[in-house]
Image (cartoon, rainbow, N blue to C red; front, side, top):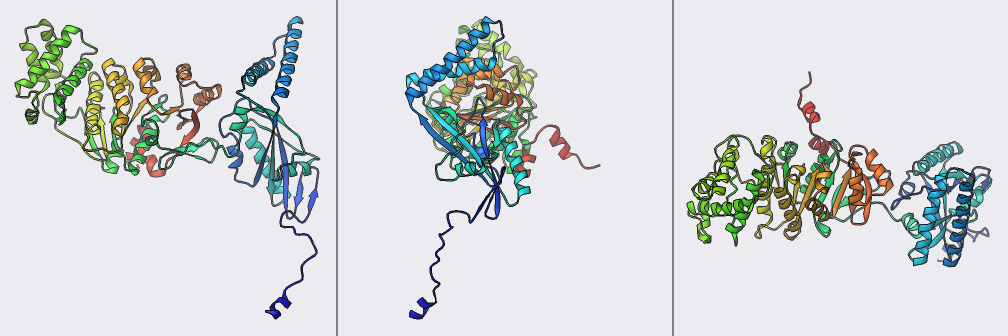
Length: 577
Protein backbone atom coordinates (compact mmCIF):
# COMPACT_ATOMS: atom_id res chain seq x y z
CA UNK A 1 0.00 0.00 0.00
CA UNK A 2 2.81 2.39 0.83
CA UNK A 3 4.60 1.61 -2.42
CA UNK A 4 1.48 2.21 -4.49
CA UNK A 5 0.87 5.62 -2.94
CA UNK A 6 4.45 6.59 -3.63
CA UNK A 7 3.95 6.01 -7.33
CA UNK A 8 0.88 8.26 -7.65
CA UNK A 9 1.56 11.49 -9.63
CA UNK A 10 1.64 14.76 -7.78
CA UNK A 11 -1.45 16.97 -8.08
CA UNK A 12 -1.29 19.42 -10.97
CA UNK A 13 -1.34 23.14 -10.22
CA UNK A 14 -3.23 23.90 -13.46
CA UNK A 15 -6.97 24.52 -13.10
CA UNK A 16 -9.15 21.72 -14.45
CA UNK A 17 -10.50 22.20 -17.98
CA UNK A 18 -13.25 19.59 -17.88
CA UNK A 19 -15.91 22.29 -18.00
CA UNK A 20 -14.49 24.35 -20.85
CA UNK A 21 -12.08 24.33 -23.81
CA UNK A 22 -8.35 24.82 -23.45
CA UNK A 23 -8.41 27.86 -25.74
CA UNK A 24 -10.80 30.04 -27.73
CA UNK A 25 -9.65 31.88 -30.85
CA UNK A 26 -12.01 34.76 -31.67
CA UNK A 27 -12.51 35.77 -35.30
CA UNK A 28 -15.04 38.20 -36.80
CA UNK A 29 -17.40 35.53 -38.15
CA UNK A 30 -16.33 32.37 -36.31
CA UNK A 31 -14.70 30.97 -33.20
CA UNK A 32 -12.07 28.29 -32.94
CA UNK A 33 -12.90 26.40 -29.77
CA UNK A 34 -10.30 23.77 -28.87
CA UNK A 35 -10.00 21.58 -31.98
CA UNK A 36 -13.31 22.59 -33.56
CA UNK A 37 -15.01 25.60 -35.12
CA UNK A 38 -18.32 27.26 -34.34
CA UNK A 39 -20.38 30.23 -35.46
CA UNK A 40 -23.45 31.77 -33.82
CA UNK A 41 -26.62 33.15 -35.37
CA UNK A 42 -29.21 35.43 -33.81
CA UNK A 43 -32.84 35.16 -34.92
CA UNK A 44 -34.09 38.69 -35.60
CA UNK A 45 -37.25 37.99 -37.63
CA UNK A 46 -40.19 35.69 -36.93
CA UNK A 47 -43.30 34.56 -38.86
CA UNK A 48 -46.66 36.06 -37.91
CA UNK A 49 -48.18 32.64 -37.19
CA UNK A 50 -46.59 29.53 -35.68
CA UNK A 51 -47.88 26.13 -34.59
CA UNK A 52 -47.21 23.94 -31.59
CA UNK A 53 -43.63 22.70 -31.47
CA UNK A 54 -42.47 25.00 -34.26
CA UNK A 55 -38.85 24.83 -32.98
CA UNK A 56 -38.74 21.07 -33.54
CA UNK A 57 -37.00 21.27 -36.98
CA UNK A 58 -34.11 23.11 -35.31
CA UNK A 59 -33.90 20.60 -32.47
CA UNK A 60 -34.08 17.72 -34.97
CA UNK A 61 -31.31 19.11 -37.21
CA UNK A 62 -28.94 16.23 -38.04
CA UNK A 63 -25.80 18.31 -37.44
CA UNK A 64 -24.44 19.63 -34.17
CA UNK A 65 -26.53 22.68 -33.39
CA UNK A 66 -27.02 24.41 -30.03
CA UNK A 67 -30.39 26.14 -29.64
CA UNK A 68 -30.81 28.62 -26.79
CA UNK A 69 -34.04 30.37 -25.80
CA UNK A 70 -33.79 33.20 -23.27
CA UNK A 71 -37.05 34.24 -21.61
CA UNK A 72 -37.60 37.29 -19.43
CA UNK A 73 -41.12 38.21 -18.21
CA UNK A 74 -42.32 41.79 -18.62
CA UNK A 75 -44.34 43.23 -15.71
CA UNK A 76 -48.01 43.59 -16.59
CA UNK A 77 -48.17 47.35 -15.95
CA UNK A 78 -45.06 47.95 -18.04
CA UNK A 79 -46.41 45.76 -20.87
CA UNK A 80 -49.77 47.55 -20.86
CA UNK A 81 -48.06 50.95 -20.92
CA UNK A 82 -45.90 49.92 -23.88
CA UNK A 83 -48.90 48.59 -25.78
CA UNK A 84 -50.82 51.83 -25.23
CA UNK A 85 -47.93 53.88 -26.52
CA UNK A 86 -47.47 51.60 -29.53
CA UNK A 87 -51.18 51.77 -30.38
CA UNK A 88 -51.07 55.56 -30.03
CA UNK A 89 -48.10 55.78 -32.43
CA UNK A 90 -49.78 53.54 -35.01
CA UNK A 91 -53.07 55.42 -34.71
CA UNK A 92 -51.38 58.79 -35.10
CA UNK A 93 -49.45 57.49 -38.10
CA UNK A 94 -52.66 56.17 -39.67
CA UNK A 95 -54.40 59.51 -39.21
CA UNK A 96 -51.42 61.39 -40.62
CA UNK A 97 -51.42 59.16 -43.70
CA UNK A 98 -55.17 59.63 -44.11
CA UNK A 99 -54.82 63.42 -43.84
CA UNK A 100 -52.18 63.41 -46.57
CA UNK A 101 -54.16 61.05 -48.81
CA UNK A 102 -51.72 58.16 -48.53
CA UNK A 103 -52.76 54.53 -48.85
CA UNK A 104 -53.10 52.47 -45.70
CA UNK A 105 -50.04 50.34 -44.95
CA UNK A 106 -51.36 46.74 -44.58
CA UNK A 107 -48.45 45.77 -42.31
CA UNK A 108 -49.35 48.56 -39.91
CA UNK A 109 -53.00 47.52 -39.94
CA UNK A 110 -52.13 43.91 -39.13
CA UNK A 111 -49.77 45.01 -36.34
CA UNK A 112 -52.48 47.26 -34.90
CA UNK A 113 -55.00 44.41 -34.87
CA UNK A 114 -52.51 42.13 -33.07
CA UNK A 115 -51.69 44.86 -30.55
CA UNK A 116 -55.39 45.45 -29.80
CA UNK A 117 -56.02 41.73 -29.31
CA UNK A 118 -52.98 41.45 -27.03
CA UNK A 119 -54.02 44.53 -25.02
CA UNK A 120 -57.46 43.00 -24.51
CA UNK A 121 -55.87 39.73 -23.33
CA UNK A 122 -53.64 41.59 -20.89
CA UNK A 123 -56.58 43.53 -19.50
CA UNK A 124 -58.50 40.29 -18.88
CA UNK A 125 -55.49 38.54 -17.38
CA UNK A 126 -55.44 35.90 -20.13
CA UNK A 127 -52.03 36.88 -21.57
CA UNK A 128 -48.62 38.02 -20.44
CA UNK A 129 -45.70 39.50 -22.34
CA UNK A 130 -42.15 38.15 -22.38
CA UNK A 131 -38.85 39.23 -23.89
CA UNK A 132 -37.48 36.26 -25.80
CA UNK A 133 -34.11 35.80 -27.47
CA UNK A 134 -33.38 32.88 -29.82
CA UNK A 135 -29.75 32.08 -30.64
CA UNK A 136 -28.13 29.25 -32.60
CA UNK A 137 -24.55 28.00 -32.50
CA UNK A 138 -23.34 25.81 -35.36
CA UNK A 139 -20.39 23.44 -34.84
CA UNK A 140 -18.07 21.82 -37.39
CA UNK A 141 -14.64 20.19 -37.54
CA UNK A 142 -13.11 22.67 -39.99
CA UNK A 143 -13.65 26.23 -41.12
CA UNK A 144 -14.76 25.14 -44.59
CA UNK A 145 -17.22 22.62 -43.17
CA UNK A 146 -18.52 25.34 -40.86
CA UNK A 147 -19.44 27.55 -43.80
CA UNK A 148 -21.42 24.74 -45.42
CA UNK A 149 -23.15 23.84 -42.15
CA UNK A 150 -24.07 27.50 -41.50
CA UNK A 151 -25.62 27.68 -44.95
CA UNK A 152 -27.72 24.58 -44.19
CA UNK A 153 -28.94 26.02 -40.88
CA UNK A 154 -29.80 29.37 -42.48
CA UNK A 155 -31.74 27.57 -45.21
CA UNK A 156 -33.62 25.61 -42.53
CA UNK A 157 -34.45 28.84 -40.72
CA UNK A 158 -35.62 30.43 -43.97
CA UNK A 159 -37.97 27.48 -44.55
CA UNK A 160 -39.45 28.21 -41.09
CA UNK A 161 -39.78 31.93 -42.01
CA UNK A 162 -37.09 32.83 -39.46
CA UNK A 163 -34.51 35.53 -40.22
CA UNK A 164 -31.23 34.26 -38.75
CA UNK A 165 -28.25 36.61 -39.03
CA UNK A 166 -24.61 35.90 -38.07
CA UNK A 167 -23.37 37.75 -34.99
CA UNK A 168 -20.44 39.33 -36.84
CA UNK A 169 -17.78 40.86 -34.54
CA UNK A 170 -19.80 39.58 -31.56
CA UNK A 171 -19.17 35.86 -31.91
CA UNK A 172 -17.85 35.44 -28.38
CA UNK A 173 -20.92 37.07 -26.84
CA UNK A 174 -23.27 35.07 -29.08
CA UNK A 175 -21.48 31.80 -28.27
CA UNK A 176 -21.71 32.48 -24.54
CA UNK A 177 -25.46 33.14 -24.98
CA UNK A 178 -25.90 29.53 -26.14
CA UNK A 179 -23.99 28.07 -23.20
CA UNK A 180 -26.00 26.68 -20.25
CA UNK A 181 -25.12 29.63 -18.00
CA UNK A 182 -28.33 31.71 -18.42
CA UNK A 183 -26.38 34.69 -19.74
CA UNK A 184 -27.64 36.74 -22.70
CA UNK A 185 -24.94 39.19 -23.70
CA UNK A 186 -26.39 39.87 -27.16
CA UNK A 187 -29.77 41.23 -26.13
CA UNK A 188 -31.52 40.51 -29.44
CA UNK A 189 -35.00 40.17 -27.91
CA UNK A 190 -38.51 39.97 -29.32
CA UNK A 191 -41.79 40.41 -27.43
CA UNK A 192 -43.81 37.15 -27.20
CA UNK A 193 -47.22 36.60 -25.69
CA UNK A 194 -48.11 33.54 -23.61
CA UNK A 195 -49.43 31.43 -26.51
CA UNK A 196 -46.42 32.09 -28.75
CA UNK A 197 -44.00 31.34 -25.93
CA UNK A 198 -45.78 28.11 -25.00
CA UNK A 199 -45.59 26.96 -28.62
CA UNK A 200 -41.86 27.74 -28.90
CA UNK A 201 -40.50 25.58 -26.09
CA UNK A 202 -37.96 23.16 -27.59
CA UNK A 203 -39.39 20.24 -25.61
CA UNK A 204 -42.95 20.96 -26.87
CA UNK A 205 -42.94 18.50 -29.75
CA UNK A 206 -45.44 18.72 -32.59
CA UNK A 207 -45.91 14.96 -32.48
CA UNK A 208 -49.19 13.33 -31.55
CA UNK A 209 -48.00 10.11 -30.01
CA UNK A 210 -49.70 7.57 -27.78
CA UNK A 211 -48.50 4.24 -26.46
CA UNK A 212 -49.64 1.28 -28.52
CA UNK A 213 -51.22 3.32 -31.31
CA UNK A 214 -51.11 3.11 -35.09
CA UNK A 215 -48.38 4.88 -37.04
CA UNK A 216 -49.86 7.41 -39.45
CA UNK A 217 -46.66 9.03 -40.70
CA UNK A 218 -43.94 11.56 -39.96
CA UNK A 219 -44.32 15.15 -38.88
CA UNK A 220 -44.11 17.37 -41.94
CA UNK A 221 -40.84 19.30 -41.85
CA UNK A 222 -39.51 17.38 -38.85
CA UNK A 223 -38.17 14.07 -37.67
CA UNK A 224 -41.01 13.22 -35.27
CA UNK A 225 -43.61 10.51 -35.79
CA UNK A 226 -47.39 10.66 -35.55
CA UNK A 227 -48.50 7.53 -33.70
CA UNK A 228 -52.12 7.69 -32.56
CA UNK A 229 -54.34 5.30 -30.59
CA UNK A 230 -57.99 5.91 -31.46
CA UNK A 231 -59.17 3.47 -28.84
CA UNK A 232 -57.62 5.58 -26.07
CA UNK A 233 -59.77 8.62 -26.94
CA UNK A 234 -63.23 9.70 -25.78
CA UNK A 235 -64.69 7.89 -28.77
CA UNK A 236 -63.06 5.61 -31.33
CA UNK A 237 -64.45 7.17 -34.53
CA UNK A 238 -62.54 9.09 -37.20
CA UNK A 239 -63.23 10.95 -40.43
CA UNK A 240 -60.89 11.28 -43.42
CA UNK A 241 -61.78 14.16 -45.75
CA UNK A 242 -59.83 14.86 -48.94
CA UNK A 243 -60.25 15.70 -52.59
CA UNK A 244 -59.97 12.97 -55.20
CA UNK A 245 -56.40 11.75 -55.62
CA UNK A 246 -55.12 13.14 -52.31
CA UNK A 247 -54.48 9.67 -50.84
CA UNK A 248 -57.45 9.18 -48.51
CA UNK A 249 -58.07 5.54 -49.50
CA UNK A 250 -54.33 4.91 -49.36
CA UNK A 251 -54.25 6.13 -45.77
CA UNK A 252 -57.39 4.16 -44.87
CA UNK A 253 -55.79 0.96 -46.15
CA UNK A 254 -52.59 1.59 -44.23
CA UNK A 255 -54.59 2.21 -41.06
CA UNK A 256 -56.55 -1.00 -41.59
CA UNK A 257 -53.39 -3.02 -42.21
CA UNK A 258 -51.58 -1.60 -39.18
CA UNK A 259 -54.67 -2.13 -37.03
CA UNK A 260 -54.51 -5.81 -37.96
CA UNK A 261 -50.94 -5.85 -36.61
CA UNK A 262 -52.38 -4.71 -33.26
CA UNK A 263 -55.00 -7.48 -33.18
CA UNK A 264 -57.94 -5.24 -34.15
CA UNK A 265 -60.64 -6.85 -36.28
CA UNK A 266 -61.39 -4.81 -39.41
CA UNK A 267 -64.42 -4.62 -41.69
CA UNK A 268 -64.43 -2.50 -44.86
CA UNK A 269 -67.25 -1.24 -47.07
CA UNK A 270 -65.45 -0.95 -50.43
CA UNK A 271 -67.48 0.69 -53.22
CA UNK A 272 -64.69 0.57 -55.82
CA UNK A 273 -63.05 -2.84 -55.22
CA UNK A 274 -59.86 -1.17 -53.93
CA UNK A 275 -59.28 -3.42 -50.91
CA UNK A 276 -59.29 -6.80 -52.65
CA UNK A 277 -55.51 -7.07 -52.87
CA UNK A 278 -55.21 -6.27 -49.18
CA UNK A 279 -57.80 -8.92 -48.24
CA UNK A 280 -56.14 -11.60 -50.34
CA UNK A 281 -52.67 -10.82 -48.97
CA UNK A 282 -53.60 -10.99 -45.28
CA UNK A 283 -55.99 -13.93 -45.64
CA UNK A 284 -59.16 -11.95 -45.09
CA UNK A 285 -62.70 -12.64 -46.32
CA UNK A 286 -63.85 -10.99 -49.54
CA UNK A 287 -67.58 -10.62 -50.24
CA UNK A 288 -68.32 -9.54 -53.80
CA UNK A 289 -71.84 -8.14 -53.76
CA UNK A 290 -73.38 -7.95 -57.22
CA UNK A 291 -71.60 -11.08 -58.42
CA UNK A 292 -73.78 -13.98 -59.61
CA UNK A 293 -75.10 -16.08 -56.75
CA UNK A 294 -74.13 -13.63 -53.99
CA UNK A 295 -77.25 -12.69 -52.03
CA UNK A 296 -78.02 -10.99 -48.74
CA UNK A 297 -81.38 -11.46 -47.05
CA UNK A 298 -82.25 -8.39 -44.96
CA UNK A 299 -84.88 -10.39 -43.02
CA UNK A 300 -82.35 -12.67 -41.29
CA UNK A 301 -82.83 -12.61 -37.52
CA UNK A 302 -80.10 -12.42 -34.91
CA UNK A 303 -80.34 -14.04 -31.53
CA UNK A 304 -81.20 -11.66 -28.74
CA UNK A 305 -84.05 -9.82 -27.08
CA UNK A 306 -86.46 -7.91 -29.34
CA UNK A 307 -84.78 -9.43 -32.40
CA UNK A 308 -87.93 -9.30 -34.51
CA UNK A 309 -88.67 -5.67 -33.63
CA UNK A 310 -85.13 -4.53 -34.40
CA UNK A 311 -85.14 -6.41 -37.70
CA UNK A 312 -88.47 -4.86 -38.67
CA UNK A 313 -87.05 -1.39 -38.02
CA UNK A 314 -84.07 -2.14 -40.24
CA UNK A 315 -86.34 -3.34 -43.05
CA UNK A 316 -88.16 0.00 -42.77
CA UNK A 317 -84.84 1.79 -43.31
CA UNK A 318 -83.82 -0.48 -46.19
CA UNK A 319 -87.12 -0.04 -48.05
CA UNK A 320 -86.85 3.74 -47.64
CA UNK A 321 -83.37 3.64 -49.19
CA UNK A 322 -84.50 1.37 -52.04
CA UNK A 323 -87.41 3.67 -52.84
CA UNK A 324 -85.34 6.85 -52.66
CA UNK A 325 -86.55 8.56 -49.50
CA UNK A 326 -88.73 8.45 -46.42
CA UNK A 327 -92.25 7.13 -46.81
CA UNK A 328 -95.46 8.97 -46.03
CA UNK A 329 -97.43 7.90 -42.92
CA UNK A 330 -99.89 5.73 -44.86
CA UNK A 331 -97.11 3.87 -46.66
CA UNK A 332 -95.15 3.44 -43.42
CA UNK A 333 -98.18 1.86 -41.70
CA UNK A 334 -98.80 -0.43 -44.67
CA UNK A 335 -95.13 -1.45 -44.74
CA UNK A 336 -95.20 -2.28 -41.03
CA UNK A 337 -98.22 -4.55 -41.50
CA UNK A 338 -96.55 -6.20 -44.48
CA UNK A 339 -93.35 -6.95 -42.55
CA UNK A 340 -95.28 -8.62 -39.73
CA UNK A 341 -97.36 -10.60 -42.26
CA UNK A 342 -94.22 -11.70 -44.14
CA UNK A 343 -92.68 -13.14 -40.97
CA UNK A 344 -95.95 -14.80 -39.99
CA UNK A 345 -96.18 -16.40 -43.44
CA UNK A 346 -93.10 -18.49 -42.60
CA UNK A 347 -94.14 -19.15 -38.99
CA UNK A 348 -92.00 -16.53 -37.25
CA UNK A 349 -93.64 -14.57 -34.43
CA UNK A 350 -92.50 -12.67 -31.35
CA UNK A 351 -91.83 -16.03 -29.68
CA UNK A 352 -88.02 -16.46 -29.65
CA UNK A 353 -88.41 -20.21 -30.23
CA UNK A 354 -89.71 -19.49 -33.75
CA UNK A 355 -86.70 -17.36 -34.74
CA UNK A 356 -84.66 -20.40 -35.81
CA UNK A 357 -86.95 -20.96 -38.81
CA UNK A 358 -85.85 -19.78 -42.28
CA UNK A 359 -86.48 -16.05 -42.67
CA UNK A 360 -88.82 -14.63 -45.33
CA UNK A 361 -87.54 -12.88 -48.43
CA UNK A 362 -88.21 -9.49 -49.95
CA UNK A 363 -90.59 -11.25 -52.36
CA UNK A 364 -92.64 -12.46 -49.37
CA UNK A 365 -92.96 -8.84 -48.24
CA UNK A 366 -94.19 -7.83 -51.68
CA UNK A 367 -96.74 -10.67 -51.63
CA UNK A 368 -97.96 -9.60 -48.19
CA UNK A 369 -98.38 -6.04 -49.44
CA UNK A 370 -100.35 -7.27 -52.46
CA UNK A 371 -102.66 -9.19 -50.16
CA UNK A 372 -103.30 -6.07 -48.07
CA UNK A 373 -106.44 -4.19 -49.09
CA UNK A 374 -104.85 -0.77 -48.59
CA UNK A 375 -104.04 1.04 -51.88
CA UNK A 376 -100.84 2.38 -50.27
CA UNK A 377 -99.68 -1.20 -49.69
CA UNK A 378 -100.26 -2.16 -53.31
CA UNK A 379 -98.37 0.94 -54.44
CA UNK A 380 -95.45 -0.10 -52.28
CA UNK A 381 -95.53 -3.60 -53.74
CA UNK A 382 -95.42 -2.16 -57.25
CA UNK A 383 -92.49 0.06 -56.38
CA UNK A 384 -90.61 -2.94 -54.94
CA UNK A 385 -91.12 -5.00 -58.12
CA UNK A 386 -87.67 -4.16 -59.61
CA UNK A 387 -86.05 -5.62 -56.47
CA UNK A 388 -88.20 -8.75 -56.24
CA UNK A 389 -88.96 -9.82 -59.81
CA UNK A 390 -87.19 -7.20 -61.93
CA UNK A 391 -83.64 -6.39 -63.00
CA UNK A 392 -82.37 -5.66 -59.48
CA UNK A 393 -83.61 -8.87 -57.86
CA UNK A 394 -80.23 -10.65 -57.85
CA UNK A 395 -79.26 -9.32 -54.42
CA UNK A 396 -82.53 -10.23 -52.69
CA UNK A 397 -84.12 -13.21 -54.50
CA UNK A 398 -82.85 -15.89 -52.13
CA UNK A 399 -81.46 -16.61 -48.67
CA UNK A 400 -78.09 -15.25 -47.62
CA UNK A 401 -75.33 -17.17 -49.37
CA UNK A 402 -72.34 -16.11 -47.26
CA UNK A 403 -71.70 -15.21 -43.65
CA UNK A 404 -68.12 -13.91 -43.69
CA UNK A 405 -65.99 -14.06 -40.58
CA UNK A 406 -62.37 -13.35 -39.88
CA UNK A 407 -59.88 -10.68 -38.88
CA UNK A 408 -60.53 -8.71 -42.10
CA UNK A 409 -63.80 -8.70 -44.04
CA UNK A 410 -64.10 -6.63 -47.23
CA UNK A 411 -67.51 -6.02 -48.82
CA UNK A 412 -67.01 -5.00 -52.45
CA UNK A 413 -69.84 -2.99 -54.04
CA UNK A 414 -68.24 -2.19 -57.37
CA UNK A 415 -70.46 -4.48 -59.46
CA UNK A 416 -73.71 -3.31 -57.88
CA UNK A 417 -75.77 -1.00 -60.12
CA UNK A 418 -75.85 2.63 -59.08
CA UNK A 419 -79.42 2.29 -57.85
CA UNK A 420 -78.25 -0.34 -55.33
CA UNK A 421 -75.02 1.28 -54.10
CA UNK A 422 -76.63 2.97 -51.11
CA UNK A 423 -78.70 -0.14 -50.30
CA UNK A 424 -75.61 -2.35 -50.61
CA UNK A 425 -73.68 -0.07 -48.25
CA UNK A 426 -76.56 -0.22 -45.79
CA UNK A 427 -76.75 -4.02 -45.96
CA UNK A 428 -73.03 -4.42 -45.36
CA UNK A 429 -73.07 -1.99 -42.45
CA UNK A 430 -75.97 -3.94 -40.98
CA UNK A 431 -74.06 -7.21 -41.34
CA UNK A 432 -71.01 -5.61 -39.69
CA UNK A 433 -73.09 -4.08 -36.93
CA UNK A 434 -74.53 -7.50 -36.07
CA UNK A 435 -71.04 -8.72 -35.26
CA UNK A 436 -70.06 -5.51 -33.48
CA UNK A 437 -73.12 -5.50 -31.23
CA UNK A 438 -72.89 -9.19 -30.32
CA UNK A 439 -72.40 -9.18 -26.51
CA UNK A 440 -70.92 -12.68 -26.62
CA UNK A 441 -68.00 -11.56 -28.82
CA UNK A 442 -66.56 -8.28 -27.52
CA UNK A 443 -63.29 -7.18 -29.03
CA UNK A 444 -61.74 -4.10 -30.62
CA UNK A 445 -63.13 -3.60 -34.10
CA UNK A 446 -62.60 -1.06 -36.87
CA UNK A 447 -65.34 -0.37 -39.43
CA UNK A 448 -64.21 1.59 -42.51
CA UNK A 449 -66.81 3.13 -44.83
CA UNK A 450 -65.03 4.32 -47.97
CA UNK A 451 -66.77 6.87 -50.20
CA UNK A 452 -69.33 7.49 -47.47
CA UNK A 453 -71.06 10.18 -49.56
CA UNK A 454 -72.94 7.32 -51.28
CA UNK A 455 -74.74 6.63 -48.00
CA UNK A 456 -74.87 10.22 -46.75
CA UNK A 457 -76.70 11.34 -49.89
CA UNK A 458 -79.71 9.31 -48.74
CA UNK A 459 -81.53 10.57 -45.60
CA UNK A 460 -82.31 7.10 -44.29
CA UNK A 461 -78.75 5.90 -44.91
CA UNK A 462 -77.32 9.00 -43.26
CA UNK A 463 -79.48 8.39 -40.21
CA UNK A 464 -78.25 4.78 -39.96
CA UNK A 465 -74.63 5.93 -40.19
CA UNK A 466 -75.31 8.55 -37.52
CA UNK A 467 -76.75 5.94 -35.15
CA UNK A 468 -73.75 3.73 -35.75
CA UNK A 469 -71.36 6.61 -35.01
CA UNK A 470 -73.19 7.32 -31.75
CA UNK A 471 -73.30 3.69 -30.58
CA UNK A 472 -69.94 2.31 -31.77
CA UNK A 473 -68.03 3.28 -28.63
CA UNK A 474 -70.41 1.27 -26.41
CA UNK A 475 -69.39 -1.89 -28.29
CA UNK A 476 -65.63 -1.13 -28.37
CA UNK A 477 -65.72 -0.32 -32.08
CA UNK A 478 -64.44 2.57 -34.14
CA UNK A 479 -66.11 3.91 -37.28
CA UNK A 480 -63.95 5.42 -40.05
CA UNK A 481 -65.82 7.61 -42.52
CA UNK A 482 -63.85 8.29 -45.71
CA UNK A 483 -65.20 10.67 -48.33
CA UNK A 484 -64.03 13.00 -51.06
CA UNK A 485 -67.18 15.14 -50.98
CA UNK A 486 -66.98 17.10 -47.74
CA UNK A 487 -70.02 19.17 -48.70
CA UNK A 488 -72.29 16.09 -48.55
CA UNK A 489 -70.97 15.23 -45.11
CA UNK A 490 -70.98 18.74 -43.66
CA UNK A 491 -74.03 20.00 -45.50
CA UNK A 492 -76.53 18.13 -43.34
CA UNK A 493 -77.13 18.04 -39.58
CA UNK A 494 -76.63 14.27 -39.53
CA UNK A 495 -73.30 14.57 -41.35
CA UNK A 496 -72.14 17.28 -38.98
CA UNK A 497 -73.12 15.03 -36.08
CA UNK A 498 -71.01 12.19 -37.56
CA UNK A 499 -68.00 14.55 -37.68
CA UNK A 500 -68.70 15.82 -34.15
CA UNK A 501 -68.70 12.23 -32.87
CA UNK A 502 -65.26 11.56 -34.36
CA UNK A 503 -62.46 12.24 -31.88
CA UNK A 504 -59.88 11.76 -34.67
CA UNK A 505 -60.23 13.98 -37.74
CA UNK A 506 -57.87 13.79 -40.71
CA UNK A 507 -57.85 16.43 -43.44
CA UNK A 508 -55.75 15.81 -46.54
CA UNK A 509 -55.39 18.02 -49.61
CA UNK A 510 -58.55 20.04 -50.29
CA UNK A 511 -60.09 21.69 -53.32
CA UNK A 512 -60.48 25.50 -53.31
CA UNK A 513 -64.26 25.05 -53.72
CA UNK A 514 -64.60 23.24 -50.36
CA UNK A 515 -61.94 24.96 -48.23
CA UNK A 516 -64.37 27.60 -46.93
CA UNK A 517 -66.80 24.93 -45.71
CA UNK A 518 -63.99 23.04 -44.00
CA UNK A 519 -62.60 26.22 -42.46
CA UNK A 520 -65.93 26.98 -40.84
CA UNK A 521 -66.46 23.39 -39.65
CA UNK A 522 -62.94 22.83 -38.25
CA UNK A 523 -61.98 26.45 -37.39
CA UNK A 524 -58.91 26.33 -39.63
CA UNK A 525 -56.35 29.10 -39.37
CA UNK A 526 -55.03 30.92 -42.42
CA UNK A 527 -51.85 28.85 -42.32
CA UNK A 528 -53.77 25.58 -42.12
CA UNK A 529 -55.96 26.61 -45.05
CA UNK A 530 -52.90 27.37 -47.15
CA UNK A 531 -51.25 24.09 -46.12
CA UNK A 532 -54.28 21.98 -47.09
CA UNK A 533 -54.65 23.76 -50.44
CA UNK A 534 -50.99 23.17 -51.34
CA UNK A 535 -50.42 19.81 -49.64
CA UNK A 536 -48.92 17.01 -51.67
CA UNK A 537 -50.32 13.52 -51.99
CA UNK A 538 -50.41 11.87 -48.57
CA UNK A 539 -49.92 15.12 -46.65
CA UNK A 540 -52.50 16.59 -44.31
CA UNK A 541 -53.56 17.52 -40.79
CA UNK A 542 -54.48 15.16 -37.99
CA UNK A 543 -56.74 16.87 -35.46
CA UNK A 544 -57.50 15.39 -32.06
CA UNK A 545 -59.43 17.76 -29.86
CA UNK A 546 -57.48 21.01 -29.65
CA UNK A 547 -54.24 19.41 -30.88
CA UNK A 548 -53.31 19.44 -34.56
CA UNK A 549 -50.24 18.25 -36.39
CA UNK A 550 -49.21 18.34 -40.04
CA UNK A 551 -47.96 14.93 -41.16
CA UNK A 552 -46.87 12.99 -44.21
CA UNK A 553 -47.99 9.39 -44.67
CA UNK A 554 -45.19 6.83 -44.39
CA UNK A 555 -45.28 3.28 -45.75
CA UNK A 556 -42.88 0.45 -46.40
CA UNK A 557 -42.36 -0.98 -49.86
CA UNK A 558 -44.70 -3.91 -49.17
CA UNK A 559 -47.36 -1.67 -47.64
CA UNK A 560 -47.12 0.66 -50.59
CA UNK A 561 -47.83 -2.17 -53.04
CA UNK A 562 -50.87 -3.23 -51.01
CA UNK A 563 -52.23 0.30 -50.64
CA UNK A 564 -51.86 1.55 -54.21
CA UNK A 565 -54.91 1.40 -56.43
CA UNK A 566 -56.13 2.19 -59.91
CA UNK A 567 -53.74 2.27 -62.83
CA UNK A 568 -50.75 1.58 -60.58
CA UNK A 569 -52.17 -1.83 -59.64
CA UNK A 570 -52.85 -2.58 -63.29
CA UNK A 571 -49.27 -1.71 -64.21
CA UNK A 572 -47.97 -3.96 -61.43
CA UNK A 573 -50.08 -6.85 -62.74
CA UNK A 574 -48.96 -6.38 -66.36
CA UNK A 575 -46.09 -8.70 -67.34
CA UNK A 576 -42.96 -7.15 -68.77
CA UNK A 577 -42.96 -7.11 -72.56
